[in-house]
Length: 166
Ligand SMILES: Nc1nc(O)c(N)c(N[C@@H]2O[C@H](COP(=O)(O)O)[C@@H](O)[C@H]2O)n1
Image (tube, rainbow, N blue to C red; front, side, top):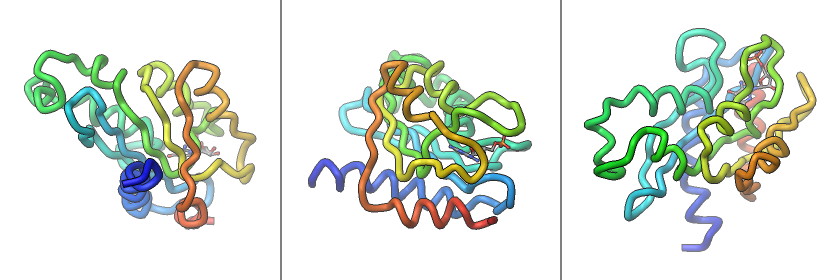
């Protein structure tokens, strides 16, 4: 399997998450998958999509919250001794759209949440277009030392799913 194929399969999974979003005219429909690299082979840690959890919630923040809410005893499938924070520090993030750097609601942006979690790499389906704000999420991640990979192949689909409510 090529590097692209190996990672596109998780981005495809994130796209399936994005399709679960309830569309809204004022935000995008985004999906996210967290994959642990601490285990012998990559394992899905959690998934999330925009507005999945109550309130005006975003895909990446929801995937982080859902992983952090797993009980300690469920973490042994990733690593017998690691904490939530240690597993997150090994994580690859697959998101159909560039993590947001500014939120119109004033809530905390996803780029900041990923930086706080100290995730390893972030694979992105498509850059955020300037429909609402000027996004600098990828640049923020790079400045914080997180590897950013722009995956090729699902840009058009990621964008059309994201804009379903517009
Ligand atoms: N990366 C990302 N994930 C999501 O789940 C999103 N909904 C977005 N959209 C971005 O967030 C802004 C909306 O902010 P509020 O939810 O109104 O606070 C929107 O302008 C996009 O930048 N991005």
